[in-house]
Image (cartoon, rainbow, N blue to C red; front, side, top):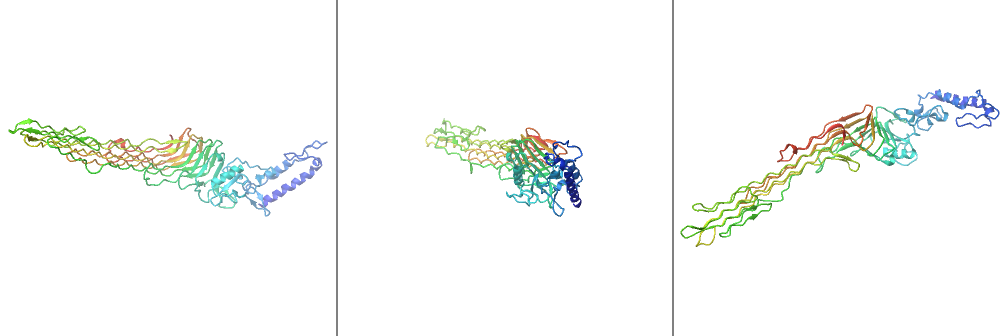
Length: 547
């Protein structure tokens, strides 16, 4: 610092000498923009007079910029120390050094200065006070820092050594064109760039960074965007939630350099629900005959009917048959020929028999597919597994066959109707798909990832299909209960994808690493479903996938 002060003093003395030497030639002539004298009337402006630019350039060239240099901004105080960030303008005042404000702090430390950037630290404060956003009084949140920077045509410098940032960061059209740089150690009075540190954006849930509607573009360097894992247990209903770290929608020139993007685990999908029967108890039993007339067909609540009873036959006094008895009819739907036989001497009448069992319901198709990306809905999970179908109602019991009675007696011995077949069991609903783990989602955007690491974790498992229920017992004289409804099919497993996109694939430069771990298995089918396709599909684990 002492050497710097001496050199500055020497430069000042040299300027004075040159000024005196050139006074006669310039005393009535203004200096030009490059600080040389215009040619005085009657002179040739000869080479003997050194220009101001020559002297100042030479003087500042001798300053040891390594000792604080442009990175410290060199605002010298009375005691010879240099205060960072007080706007010495990178030696512009002497034209000996010019700081290229377009460079990254990674490439040139001279830009780490209040005149070029708005500073952000978790220990800062968000307000509109005049000094907020300086190295000495940083803003607290990156979002506020961006807003300050947009109003001052500056970039944003984010401290990495004072903790993480827990707010989701939205960058929409009002923040188009901003550049955000992390990787700063702000533990001292002077902020320093650190190649080993990254500012971390890690909200407790949801997307860490959402970029939308940009045309000028945005730059992020030396930052880590982390999405939290979703709950490890399935929701009460619906698909599992996905963990997505960064979403870029309908934006151009989005650049990530030395950025880490990491998604958490996807949530398991909810299981399908067990079926609910709409009936209770047993099916209605058959009706009795009215005298010699057989009981009529018995309609059943779930469908079908009990068979009608047969009419009784008539005997004369000698025991001969004057009117034959009638057989009972079969129950509906037609299955077994279960009507009772009519009486025919010497054989008595026969009872109707039980109807055929209802058929099993079918299992649905297991959940599968990729899911989808769209500008409006963002990431949408695959559909749930298919529902099973309910068991069919059983055949009604056959009607009883008619008996025989003597003509002298009152009519009797008509056959009773068959009882109702049981209702089918209710079906189980399909299980829901598991959530996915996706580091970067790009929807119709232009993105470059340069020397970045993108990491996806485990997808959530698909939900198990719901169980079907047992069918109803048949009524007296009726058929057996219908078969139980089949269970629902399983939901698809969640995906593990580093980059999922529609439109143009993000460009990968430098040594960019895509890390994916384990995709999830599909959900199992519910009870009663044996078909192989009733299990939910396995999720994908892939580095880059167009959807």
